Amino acid sequence: MVGFEIGDVPFNPDGWGPPDTTDSSTNTPFAPFSRSDKLGRIADWTRSNPNTRPNTRPNNNNNPNDSAFDFTTDDSFALSLNPEDDSTFRLVDGKPPPRPKFGPKWRFNNNRNQLPQRRDEEVEAKKREAEKQRARRDRLYHANRSGNNNPRREAAVFKSSVDIQPEWNMLDQIPFSTFTKLSYNVADAEDLLVCGGLEPYDKSYDRITPKNERRLERFKNRNFFKVTTTDDPIIRRLANEDKATVFATDAILSTLMCAPRSVYSWDIVVQRVGNKLFFDKRDGSQLDLLSVNETSQEPLPEAKDDINSAHSLSVEAAYINQNFSQQVLVRDGGKVSFDEPNPFASEGEEVASVGYRYRRWKLDNDTSLVVRCEVQSYMEVNNQKSFLTLNALNEFDPKYSGVDWRRKLDTQRGAVLATELKNNANKIAKWTAQAILGGADMMKLGYVTRVHPRDHFNHVILAVVGYKPKEFAGQINLNTSNMWGIVKSIVDLCMKLNEGKYVLVKDPQKPQVRIYEVPADAFENDYVEEPLPEDEQVQPPVENADALDENGAKDEVEPKEVKAEA
Image (cartoon, rainbow, N blue to C red):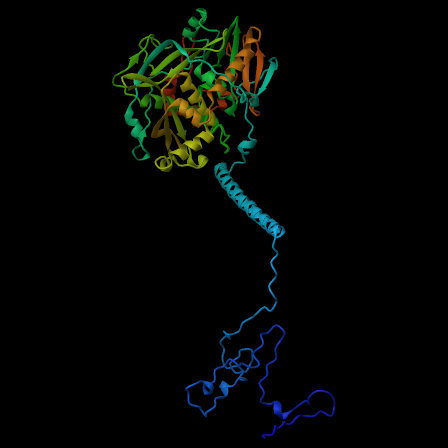
């Protein structure tokens, strides 16, 4: 029997533990470690020993590295000769897995813990999207400020279209919220008389694209007329013949119909004479001009001499609209003349292509309405003449709208129209209402832009698009029943007033309209109500002054130019 030899055990006579120095521990590998270090293996019984493999010859040359107690390949020791990580090291969690909780209560608690997390993610996504939109608005706002400390459109202070005199007596105040709830249906209109003459529409303009744009021409020899209701000789004749009890023009009536969409101040003069009611506009009224970016959230420059101020853009838009309505016509022939000539033109005077349709609607058994409606052209469709209205949208600077017409009209025409509907909702709605009142079969919208953003003299036509008025009204959410409901309520209210002169004024700051009783001589004998002095108003372009002078609105009483000044 082989004996078991016990090695030398050091004895420490001075106390507990091994002695300070022992000869037996000099060759023992040891490395100090902290509690956070990875410990090496004490013994590796998985090491393959070539001597124990089957079908192998025993090898007497024992390699010390084949020992189960070899620590030289472990990187946790300082004496390790192998610098690579130990790929065989695994950290195993010995804690048993939690037991699943089954039942409805566990499912409910599990879902309840997940819902707040999803809700938080949605809230964070909305916050990020709102932050992007706010950053975009701020970027556009700072780009449009041009170094001026102008307030934002939300805080802009608009001025009244007419100076409210202290002797005026306010009779009523109607908020726009009551207008949106009104509804009234009327029968189809009947034509009492058609005056003037129309030239046919040139269909080649329907094929215009930004790549083959056309220059906007100037028509200095054609006269345009903006005559108010009581100055119209045809309406005077119809009133004497008792054809109706209420008289107006399409421009005035469309302003009433689309009043809830308006932002700028406007005013309409109401005259009650006997049992008849006349809706008029003042000389030099803002109704003769076209607003630009009225419903936009971005502010326009307030400087009077800035070409992009609200007044300068209104004059420019009226000038563009007049020239566009005459350029897209076939002027060589095919002009159609109606029953009577233009009632406002002198003999031998060249006038613009326009047809005046005096149409009558029956509001109720006692009230009839006659409106002078305008159409600018016609087309031959199935051997029948279809009336057209021609209007032009104008782009002055792509930085204000954020949409460049030259780039987007070909590929994203819907986006361009949507942007215009957002920035000019009132103007487009009034054009649509005028087309419906005039019985037009088609309304043509032209896209006109400046040759250069800082050049307000020269313009080009980028595209012309046609829409059916009633279908287009549905697209822009313009309810015809609501339009007639507003007219009917205003007519009923004014019919209850005594004979005299009154003014409907849209409040410049609040969405409401006020009714004032004014003296009988108001707005006459040079009693012109303009919020801005004449020397502060922006004049039309100098090189186009002759065109505006000759194309100014005139009537039999006195000439009127298509400008803000009378």
